[in-house]
Image (cartoon, rainbow, N blue to C red; front, side, top):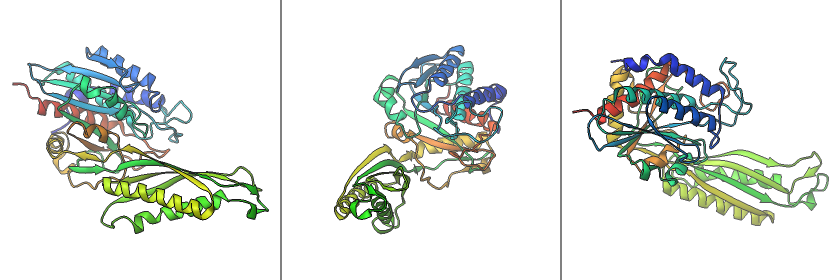
Length: 387
């Protein structure tokens, strides 16, 4: 069975909305224009709107037919990435250093399509909370909304989210019960040594040498401290040091991320990083400050809600294209923090194109907008049937 016909009829409008959002990307907690468009669209469809949770977050409330007490939340993220776009599309980013390189413009548009459909039909018995979240890209938007009382003000019995997936084919939907995405920690390691002339290294405590030694030592944690049957990643993604050809820098700064599926492994890695920093600081007679921050938890899909996604997906796309044995992803997602509070599920919608997310050449396929919107809508109608 296909996507919902009424939502298919919105396809051109949804594409126009998505491309407008794409051309005007805003990064985390700066989604002023985006949240304004979301709020205005919801109001135009007669939907109750609340703004300001988590800064720029928007909540839409739709009540269905009947007096059902069940409440379901649907969530979409709104923020772009702080990176350049290299697609040459007519609707490419008009803002330098800002790019919807993860497809959140598509997620927002899908939920808007769902919102319009549910507002027009109200073919469900209960309440839907539409959660438009800011700042998913490592800035803690989910936690900000929760801290502002998201689930106290808008209680949910179940919660669903989605993500586009260029690594799947168009018309494929994937859902993985249990741990589905890794936790994420970000770290900053600040080295304070002693600078000197480049021709007089004996007078220095060379922060570059210390940094490279530290980077290599940290890479042994996964290979020599973590159980080989446990998944773990440590990636150093930035090294900053020096400003001249003939100056040995006294300071250096390393940044990176840790990904695991286990709180025990997560704690082990953090402890080992701190121990290695202390040991190298003693060996090189310098100081190393280690700041390791809990950014996202492990995203765990509940079995019951995962089964709902699977069954609904079989009514939206070819049942042969519903993937339930997908591999867990080492990438992270702050929807995990919402799922630690409310039972739910997070799924992936495949689309044409092979360029991965977070790449300057990433292109979202607009043909999946009705698919995502139909998935959300049918989940609501399935879980809160009328009569």
